[in-house]
Length: 172
Image 1 (cartoon, rainbow, N blue to C red):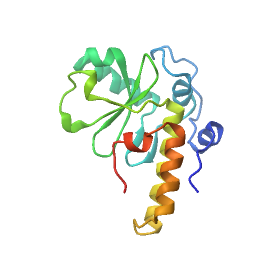
Image 2: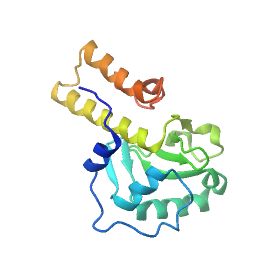
Image 3: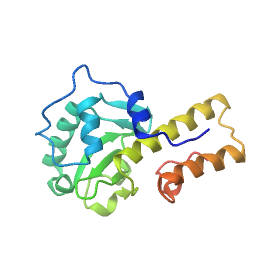
Image 4: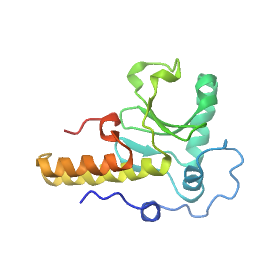
């Protein structure tokens, strides 16, 4: 129950592209795990709050971002969205995953983005733990006992200290 999956096991669960991409020259220099994801895998919905864009969608979305907000596009790369219209980014400089709440309106500066302090692979690990939580909550009519909640939070925080508190959505 609530075990952080190793990277190879995570990648084996994600649908693969029919043919891996060989040319990623249109992309900036980003976290190698993220670039590998784009080259080898399709877009993915891990949970309704964690939807990752495919290579093609990421290119389109980031071209639009560069037109709308060149300053933000110079530092961040849009990697996905939530079902509510919020967005997930990767920092081009340090590889951290950031969250943007759409209720803030237009992008003005980097202080609007919540830095989770995790890499792309850790983001996937976190996502699959949240997927496991959502399945368990569905099976138990959203009622989990204290032991389950503590086990989940410990698993999330094993990825990065206080990650359960940094995650932008509340489950408990």
